[in-house]
Length: 184
Image (cartoon, rainbow, N blue to C red; front, side, top):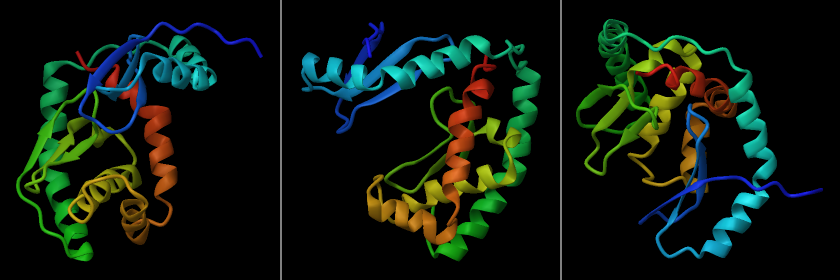
């Protein structure tokens, strides 16, 4: 198999792992630890060449949908504020965890996040995903109240609440980019 050269941008930070992101515009971003060598980065990108090619070709095949209007985003955020706090409270009680405030945003890179102080952020575009995917994102963030990482212990916590969470993760990987691509 012949290796293809992939153009990519490196973003170094204090993170501990390396990951690849493909933007809705087709740019390949490699996020990695500050001290990771260029050789290790190149090797990682080469090992993911088939994955990158697959996702770039899917991006090219996807029909271009119009960007959301500010009014549509406002309505999605209002809907999210009516739905997400209630679902979050439901799962938090079931999981016996607490949390701080809930904020709704329209983010290009995250579906949700949990701060170390327990504040939760959710993407307003979650109002456009299936219910089980929304529940997965909420449970995922609440599990960070028990484990502030993505260790096996963390995923075990997720599976205690949602034993079939992998299908929701897969849905987000396969369909989430098309929604995010419509952000203005």
